[in-house]
Amino acid sequence: MIAMSVLLMVVLGIWLGAVMIGLVFKLVFSLIGGLFSLIGAVLGLFFGGIALLIAAPIVALALLPVCLPVIVVAAVVWAIVRTARGPAHQPVAASAR
Image 1 (tube, rainbow, N blue to C red):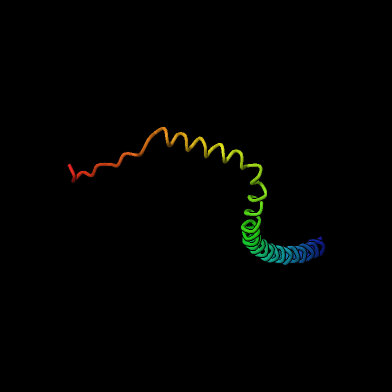
Image 2: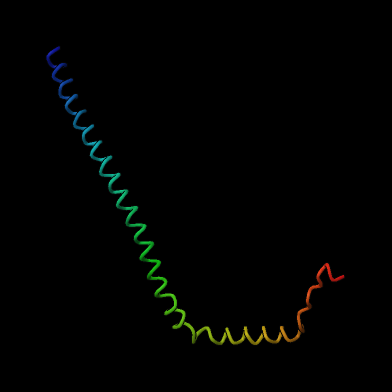
């Protein structure tokens, strides 16, 4: 009986050692994978921003015929309101009183 319990403790000790080695490998590889993921995210934001800077003006120019009537109507309304209000009054300085 004592021999079986010693044998069981040896087997479980080897098992526990293997589990600890596996845990260390898992921790190291997860940290390395997280670092690569972080680097990939930063590079994705950088290159995505560059692509957006290139694509945004092209998309804006492509949508200009659709938006032009709205822009013209807004400009006409702004011009009518501006002429109806008259010239802006100049503020009087406190030292000029």
